[in-house]
Length: 223
Image (cartoon, rainbow, N blue to C red; front, side, top):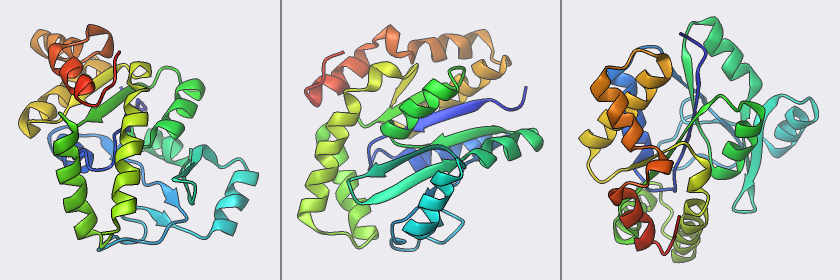
């Protein structure tokens, strides 16, 4: 069954990219959508690999032409968006599509594509997030303390929206999180085993697992 859309959201520093890459290595036919952005490349980022880096004028022209499935302004500075063509092209290739988007964009897509599978990836607690975020910031040559604190505050605001996602994965153990995300994908495809169906069910936000509730409470978020 090709053409399934998966929405993936996570605070910066949650280990989302590593998790998604591992799942794609294990599950065939998962295509990763490359978003458009007006921000400058960071660290070793390459155009058309991590993002399509374009000018603000070019981005606004795409908005005017209704070329985006979703778009948003992040941190009040830069545009990010997913082109409608990404989903069409993935379907034509017989693939499912993973959208790596923030909460603003995810909520837009949930309205436009209500059948999409929505997955929120979160760290186990604020200390782990801050450690990962500082490590990532050093790798991207972004060491401004104000930027780091801004991202931490943004993470808590994003976590407050987690109930709008069908699934939530606490990324405290990579191998376990990979198994959970793989189970979610296979369930959506209708090819999961009974064990995988049960695993995916435990990851539903409505299940309110002890691990999820503990992670949210560590951030001061109640579901």
